[in-house]
Length: 399
Image 1 (cartoon, rainbow, N blue to C red):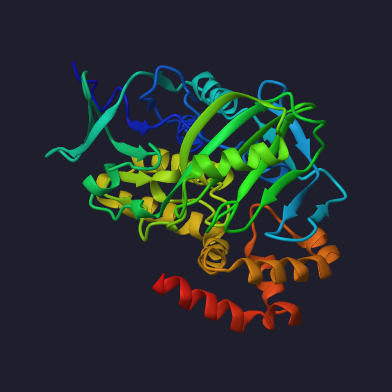
Image 2: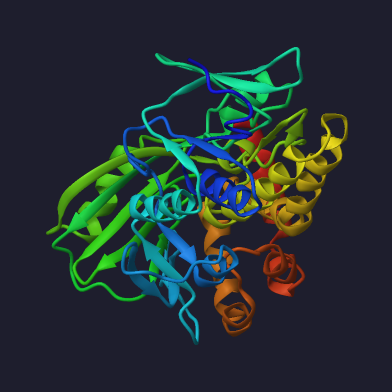
């Protein structure tokens, strides 16, 4: 039997970071909220590297918790294709390594405590509109649900936005990725390590994230090569005595956000809207904060006459773009240029990074990267590289 609109005014599809924050904020603003998760357990399976900035956590109203925190990070080590690594160390801790499954569960529990009704093992197959103005979703192998507003937070590959009349992200811009959970590694520090070059992860990068004193999360993404071979080669070189305790395959979305994130009684957030940093594939903070904005807008819209709701939902779209849009545009440009660079150009790029390291350490921001990208591109060392970047970009188009 279908649930009536009066019983569930807002339907949120997907209990990840974006969906649970949307549900929580909608409930806090007085709405009745139904949160639908396709898997038996929230947060499982997880495909995330689990790095989130402390500033980003604060934006989401969350402090590091023993329930999900694994390690605090105070910088990064960049490995160019050749030569010595470049070490960036900040004065204060900048990021938290989290267990993503437990983090998602933590946020979902907060939503449930606020009155959200959570249904697991509920795979939504279709968005639908009814003649009386209400909306709903069809559920695979089960009853459907009707309501006043649907929030799509169902992640990469979602087709609900298309069914609601919106553009979807370019799913061809998903980079295949693979990640290992390593144990019995050498002593781990408090920095993330990033590896670049055609022999590591052409077109993107590989990473090593410390999760304990002798454990690390190591992975990479690349469209141009066999990701398993690349990852096995990296592990064999840097952690030859480690053991692999877990393997996770996934993808990194680098297409940039869709042009419009709302339609009649419908909004889309998180990976389903490609609210993701193209430079790293990270979307915890952007998706979570956009979920907060979406939940607040949906709660307000549900109390508003249907013919006036479009203004409120459109404002959600404006608000999240005002917060993140400029940075995402600049990160998109940086990713497209970076993906085409030859190893030689990358080596020269990191020479420039080394020269301006104090300024980068002072001004870099994990979540708002646009400013530091623009600032570095005005430096003489990087301006001198532009002809090489142009040649590499042209070569990449034809190869």
